Length: 451
Length: 165
Image (cartoon, rainbow over all chains, first blue to last red; front, side):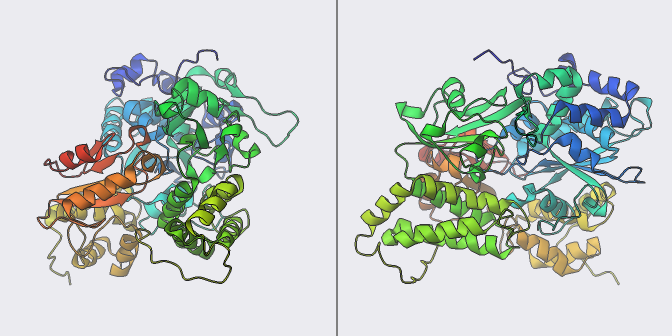
């Protein structure tokens, strides 16, 4: 592997790296001044669009293209919401960016607001990040004092305020319209689309929702150029006209059963095995991996034999996972029960389903009940088919829910049972020798801890 | 007629009003207001909901509707002076998160979400705290407790801590 010098993480380990002085000494804010002096908003949109930057929050949609969906010549206001409700299990790259290099994020927000003609940007920050809260607020204050925020920035007609808005521990606020509802002071129930936020979003005004890491990428594209960004990653597949490619550096979060968990920056397209071996020091205790989550728990599971899959936007889908997601790679070693893993996953989604759509609310809750029963030694082989049926019927893809988080709840169930069915069957037969073959309805166990 | 406020102090209302220019309407102040009240009272009783609604020109039901969506805000009684969120999501669970939670509940004689009788400590299971590089971890007020063993966590949670901000 050719050595890759971190860019998004260049401030990590730098003394006082989070201060504006340090950021400017590394070349920060100069690109912003240049853009404000020389470029029109449309030029910035064009720059980001031609860089091929795809949103880092999970869906991987083209950032520049998203911006072009805003209505032209809108009288305003237009809002930018920055999604810092990083709640996908296994994911912590936004936290690192906000704590160690908040000005990189803020410069990206200013550039993105300039491009989209937003005059107010809200950073929706999850409650669980108090340290990020303090770091970001201090950085915002520094940026105001330096004249990068406020009215008539650098003598132009462009004005921008950035406000921090704190969530209250709900996973669904990471869904962009759930985030908007929450910001408006309501329960975070995702909206039916269309209208998309670009047409009618926050406070019923045109709105762009972008992830923290996406903002950092925008700052780096402005500093280093489109060609630099496009020189990293995996080019578009010429045989597939629908593949926009996976360009740029990516922050991979590595956790679980590895020797050295951490947030590592690598070109998009590194394989899971490279990541685990070269950055993570291998699977812990000299063991082997049984399964690996490629991008946050909702992306499903890869088996050991699938670890050479490149972690770009197209890779995990080729082995039956939902996608790259947040690029949070969680390693599960060969001594861990896959039944325990799936129970943990189902418990998470049963707890975090917002309850708006019946298939997700009931599906996540009943899948947890079934897993509780299986773990209590009362599983039946039929349960595996029932679980699969739940997995196949809830989500946007089967068309039964408003938001895609239900697909994320379904994927670990589908992947776990399809890829590890033998282990589930062995477990059920071993723990329920007299009842595993029963197919009559059985009552659910009383469960603790779902709500 | 403006009703007499009994729970919200002038200081809390001033803090809420200071945020008002950030938003084009007053409903958007709901979550900030709930946080401001919760930071002081360690819970948001029904009386506070009614008074927040008055301050924000909303129906109490609108504020209550939002509050109940987020499991974050206790309503019946205050949480402990230290509120410890023990992560139970996948990365922490793989490194002993569930065991950590069980140990802490048992040693402190509380059920999950429970508060010790002296009102010092509440232990709550939490979904991913976004600190999987330090699994298993605990968020105790504003402090992230990293790579916790049951024994280390037990000792950490006995220490006094600044209020959550």
